Amino acid sequence: MKSVVSIVEGDGEVEALPVLLRRLAEWLSPNDYVHVGRPIRVKRDQFLNRADEFEKKLRLAAGLCAGDGWILILLDADDDCPVELAQTIRQRAAAIIPDHFVSIVLANREYEAWFIASAEALDGCRNFVCPPQVPAAESIRAAKQWISLQIRNGAYHEVLDQPAFSARLNLERAHANSRSFRKLCSDWQRAMNHLTLAGE
View 1 (tube, rainbow, N blue to C red):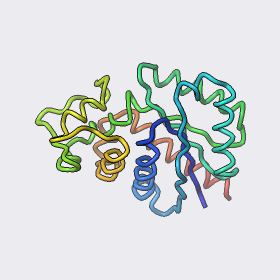
View 2: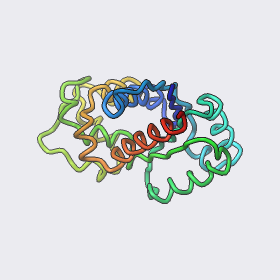
View 3: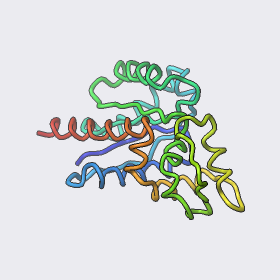
View 4: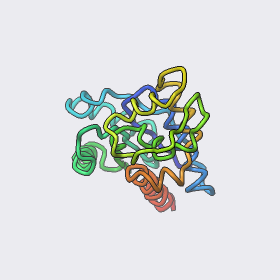
C-alpha cells in the first residue's frame, strides 16, 4: 500500500489537504490505493529556522509512513522564492532521512491561490461569489484576504472553508492556472512512480 504523510503550517491545511490529496489520487492515480495520513502541523518559522524542530518533524513523518511512503512538505511561499526555498529544504531533508522520498511544494504565495486559480468552480460554495474578473492566481500577495472579500455576509474561516473549497476545486482549472499547483501534481506522479518501482 502506498502512503503519504504531509507536513503543513496551518490548521486549515490539516483538514483540507487530505481532501485535496484524495481527489488527486482519484484524478491522477485511479488504479492505486493511496493512504493519506493526517498532516503534521508545524510553525513555519520554527520548522525552517530551528534545526532540532526541523529534524524532529521529519523523523516523525518518516516514522508514520515507514520506508515505502512519501513525505510531502507543503508550505506557503509567502515572500520567499519558491524554487530556492524548496531546494534548501530538500537538501536539509535528504541529510536527515536519505532513505525516504521527500518532496517540497510551496504554494505561491498561499494555499488559497489555488482557490483563485479555480474561482469559478467555487461560486456558491460557503457564500463565495465569484466576481466577473478573477486576477491571476499567483499575482496576489494576500490570497486569503481576496477570498474573504468574495464571501457574502461573512469572512473567510480557514478550518471550515479550506476543506469545503478543496472538495469543490476544479483540478484541471487549478492545474492550468497555477504553477505551484502543477508542481503538486507532478510531485504526486513522481512519488507514485517511485513507490511503484520501490515495491517491485
